Length: 199
Image 1: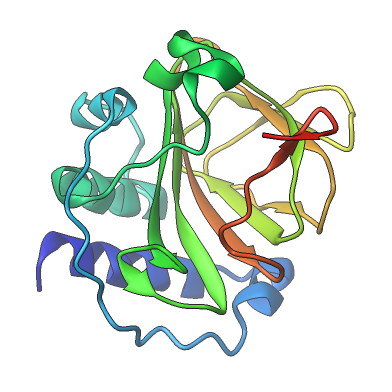
Image 2: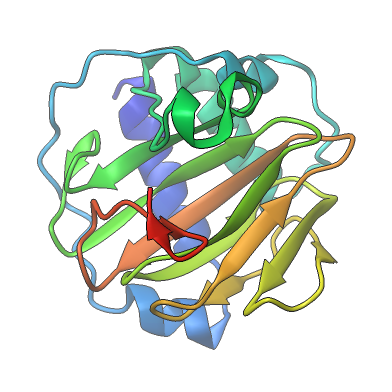
């Protein structure tokens, strides 16, 4: 197994080890046996945060984070937005990788999953999309807002559920955010709608 295949196994095992009913319903019946696509590695500046030592403890999040760091150089990191959307500073500290899904390293039209990375002091504005979404931060200290409510701190291992088309936003302070994500329902490649307009 290569590092990307090992990451998929770790991703699956991490999710299946959780007892949260919302997450359990979300992934119920999903077929984890998927065909692998040949995607060329593509680096982004934000991926450098994975190469810096992190203090994550010794739990399940640490195991998954280490597998992500091991595979980082083989992954196809991407960005949804351009410099005209949020500026160059945002793009230096933002990126994601789709491990599986409509355009990921493994092919699925049923569900998409991967990781979002945000560097320190980033504000990812209010946005929404048709797909139902789950996030699980792998790092501590990020701030999250849902349905235009105040930003609240969320912690490593928390299940954050966004129903279809609900507004949500994220903000980092001194530390970067690494978050596992899942999308299901609707277009798995839809561009998010920000501030009432398609980005």
